[in-house]
Amino acid sequence: MKLNEVLKSESISEIEEKIIFEIIPELESEKGFLQNNPWHIYDVWDHTRKVFQSSKSGDEEIRLAILLHDVGKPYSYQDDENGVRHFRGHAQKSAEMSRGILQRLGYDDEKVDRICFLISNHDKTIQPSKVKKSELPLFRKLLFMQYCDASGYNPEYINGVFERLDAISSKLIEREKSNDDFEEI
Image 1 (cartoon, rainbow, N blue to C red):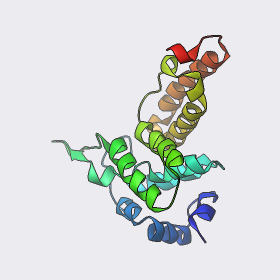
Image 2 (tube, rainbow, N blue to C red; image 1 turned 120 degrees about the horizontal axis):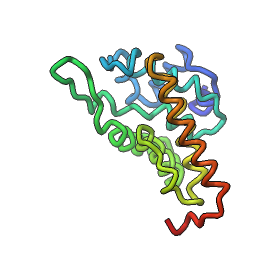
Image 3 (cartoon, rainbow, N blue to C red; image 1 turned 30 degrees about the vertical axis):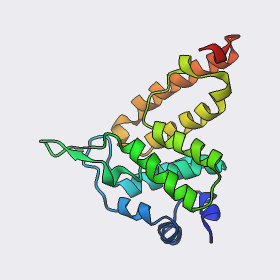
Image 4 (cartoon, rainbow, N blue to C red; image 1 turned 120 degrees about the vertical axis):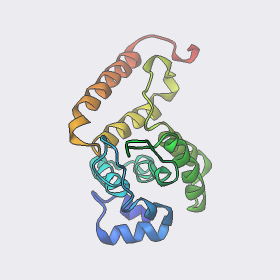
């Protein structure tokens, strides 16, 4: 079984986990790495598995971005005085690490750039008014990824995040239907 087959799976089994860790050993540092944050009740790897399972997407870029979106968390955390763990800058660190991983795996530069864009922006609020028409397909992927990521949060916070993402989705749809010249923004 190769990585492409794992990416098509609905979830990550123990066998697939071993394959992933052989192909992308950087991900193994997520396993057992506690997030100690009210937004997260899972360790980083279990969060990633849950997000992966929620995606059920046949899109290879989305699946790779989801698999790698938090690879930088174990290397970019800060614990505050109350023991709450924060991960400021983890999206950039994850994108940086993912670029090297994806290049090592032989993905072409354009695909690597798109996947790293998704990873580096997975925790940023999309501003529909700033999205160019030519960027809409990529931002739709990013929004989908953000929905998937939210599904791996503490259930106490998921509905609020989904409501925020639904509002962004509506604005993207309005923007797409408008006659605005997106390219001039």
